[in-house]
Image (cartoon, rainbow, N blue to C red; front, side, top):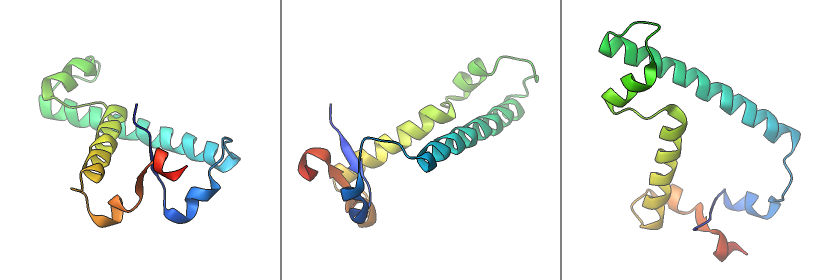
Length: 104
């Protein structure tokens, strides 16, 4: 498994194993944001396919070939990391994408 560290250079030295209170708050707000985005995506899928409000949304998303928002974010992040590793991303991203093994 390949581990990467995506942090600005000035924050790499401050990494530790604990989560601070502000990090937990950030995780909560990120989860809330993803739920809101998923709601918007579901509504858009219903509009595009003209499906009813109480129809199951998963088959509709599959029909449109749309990933759920959590999977979409993971896919986009993985794609950015792949581009950084192969030198296909802009320099402002590749400068901050460092293999963990080269940091320690």
